[in-house]
Length: 284
Image 1 (cartoon, rainbow, N blue to C red):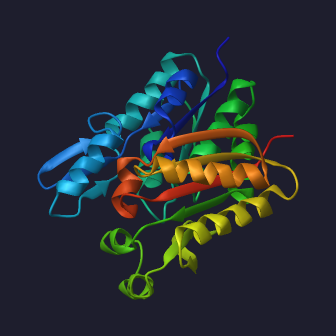
Image 2: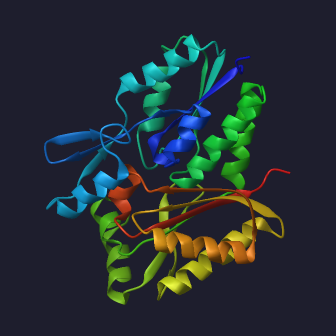
């Protein structure tokens, strides 16, 4: 039996490819451009190839919102599969024009589409999309699916530790002054998502060890003595990801865990070596 509601998200959610295929999630891809070559994230350019290009490129790549045709195809596919409505769950409007484009294309969709600006990105958006999918798979209404996303948005923490602030500065996600301070002090900054969906420096630490310890503290605060669903993403830093899991597992009970590479869109702005952690209180 087909669920009444279909869920669509975008490639900044950085969900593991095998999980996307297993669940049948519809993921609308953004694009990344190196010079005069444009690639579709997760379609014509996989994360591993992206980082090889990033290392070899003399210029910073640029990112762009999805082609309208990708939304048209996702929404039409949901109608063809027999769904009766769509909840479209996307990255922060403060970071991308994806939400605006989704709302524009929803006007011409065959089904009613509820577009959500989650004010999230990366693993936190991934957790929101998974929550929406779980609710939809249970036969939830549009309002109930939206509520499942809101719960993640209100209670999740999205954190990122980067090797350097240079990529965020060059991509316009941090001011030059913010980046200069971090670079001068040679710190490992912990970035977080603000309530209005922007990326800011949460605090500064001196070493990777202290950064990961502090991230663990912040996840423990979210757990509040209970368990969490968590996602760890990394930009070609599997050893750091493993170390992060060890720290998390020693402090909190992880009910559901996912791990993935940071994709080309987020990777453009954080650079290689970054580690991201997203967590939300587990379903009870």
